[in-house]
Length: 397
Image: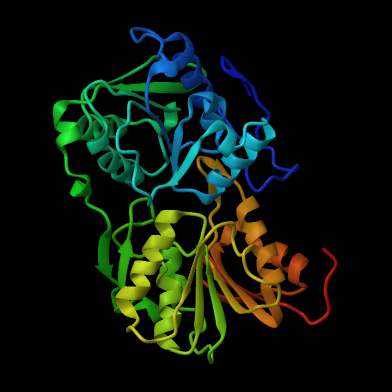
């Protein structure tokens, strides 16, 4: 990526030479050009004397790496984006400690005062709303606020959020299908209490929710399907094994944790592990678990990170997975296939991976190649639940 601040070799995380997706896009480039030279009616930003710079929602660390000399603070909900940022800074020879870059999560307290706020518009409007509410008390009338996104990511509702929470908002002309957002914080923004956002959202699973029926679900902002079970999870809950006989069970890509919590409620002896790359998701899963499982029962594990990479090989009896098939706006099965390969590694011989997915994804082919077997545990016109068993004899990888 070539910018006014230098040229950088950037990769996504985990790094995969077969991945054809870039770690930056035209919106990142547009924002960096603007910061150096100004665009339209807005002049350049004097970053060297700007004060505290916060980068919100940096996809893979492109903005943070390019602006490292100005000691920015990055706030992200993605542990993978956080790891990518650290790796890209190291690759550029300016690791986080040397550059004094601060990496925060969406669950961490933000900087006390923000003088420049750069926002990569996320796919989730709810996550944007939640983060703007959290940051509003920390901006001031002189804070420079610039958002960036591809044209297809910026809608009227996006601009209304900036306007409602921070202040008057305008957009730039589009360049290479990217657009900038210019927002001027009002006096009301910094006076707004941080807890004003309508998150988290809590609801009760209805009687058609299979093994999840009656559970209280807590959703922090950004978690898919905020106020009800999504169709795939509902179908999964009608199919998954819950008589686990004290097994170690992983809710992989746990989201709000309703699947793993359903297992924990059905089998008090089960050792349930919740893992997701989203800090908001794991916070949701913990809250959902605590809302349904009485204190004193076996404690669950909660991990934010790259799938089940943090677990020991052969340490798991059952993995339950509703894999994503998008990476931001891009449609890809790379994340799901990585989840499957990781699952096989952590499963003990005879351990099982259960997957729910849209039928058209064709995951049965990948599972047969990886595990040597795959069977349909349940199906309907749109979704299928697949079961694969780790065989005693290792298969070549």
